[in-house]
Image (cartoon, rainbow, N blue to C red; front, side, top):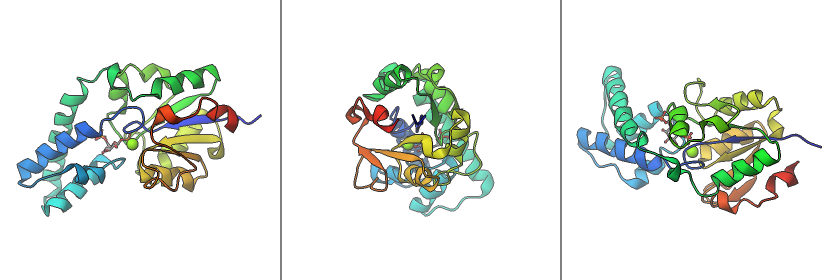
Length: 216
Ligand code: B16
Ligand code: MG
């Protein structure tokens, strides 16, 4: 029997923190004198914090010194923290807890593989921190998705070869990262956008109960 392990992305899979990132980035754009829309925010999903600022500045055609960029990154994160410190378990996305329960019952280990430096705090806020066998986040990697570093570290924690790891992701960059190292990629969200994934579901409630047993 094959042994598998699971790596979950955070934003867009376990919780929807994109809406809070949006509010904080929008506030920053306002300060810089331009509008930042929900469509613009789509470009930042799964992208690192530093890269997100560059994309935002590009949208507003604003040029800043490295020092100023650093200051804006800090103030954006301060705003974002104001939102996430108010989060609670009710913000866990539908189906997420059921999947974790299923994995526990099957004795399949799972870790987090997120670009967010705030991932541990968010998991604590929603009461899921202790359930994961490990957390790989924006603090643990030097290369952002689509580089597979985050998932490779995850597979090491799981003590499994990449081909035995199942990745749940909502961002194209995350699916690309998983595919690069032959992990089993599961796209959560729009199938047309995540068409490179090995499996697709609109959300976690659609994942069949026997999904993992079939992979074993
Ligand atoms: P932070 P994920 C990502 O989370 C978000 O999707 C992305 O919008 C954000 O810029 C990135 O985390 C960094 O977040 O500012 O908290 O370090 O989808 O990889 O779980
Ligand atoms: Mg995500």
